[in-house]
Image (cartoon, rainbow, N blue to C red; front, side, top):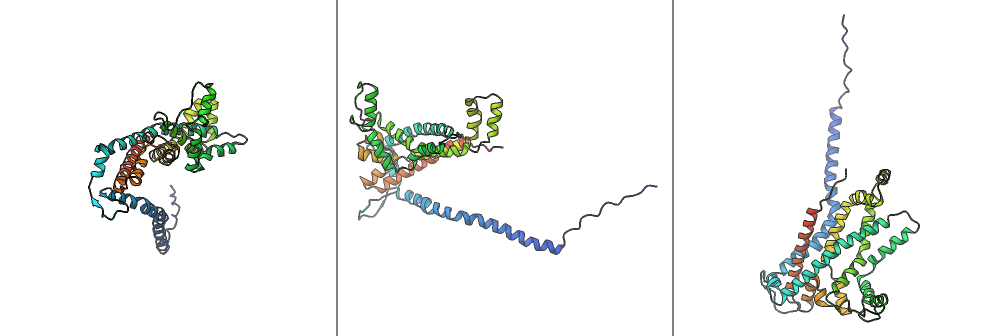
Length: 328
């Protein structure tokens, strides 16, 4: 005689009344989550709209007009003529193209060199050594210096006279065979001098960003590599660089934007140290010069819009080539 076993009784379902009480709570919680995110982002978005989007749209509008500051004449609509003159006018086009070329040269040299130095310094300062905090502060100090102070320091270094620090050093190391050189006045060395100044002043900022990423790499990876008899260079190539790859992409994009926005050091060195204006001219310097010397707001805003478009195109191209990877 076969015995039949009855299955255990199923757990009782939640009462309908209790489920009805839970539903409004969950719905209110979901609605509050949907509202909390936009409310938290509202101050930042308002700042972006008020201080970036609105001025940029206004700049685009001004670029289509001939506007003279302090002039009693009303602005006159000129269409795209401001943009056309930047590339075709026999007087303005050479200056603008030279400024754009200087910007491109500055960016091509500064972006890889400054990023590479920042990575090397970050690796060196990521060691557990006595007094390492002092060295980290020392390397970061130029970042917090005002650009005016940095330019004054480098003005003394690059002084064209024999008393300049760089000229004195060159004369000492060459035994007097090489005389004083006008580093900022010579077309061959003026932009290179600004590049050296900019890297010295800005490499600490990128270094700190990369240093934070290095400290997030698990130590177990290096221990496993040492067990596999990997040397320091192999650990750097196969562990360190892949571990900070996404951070390096961010640093490259940030450095690109800063490189195309170079202005402060150029203006100070031209106006106070007698730098070669043609060799140091940048796009932003050209834009401000259009307002200061020519009183042309429309031309200055047209130059700024062109520079903005160039930065966006270059940044998007870099972002497409250097894709970030999510770490599993």
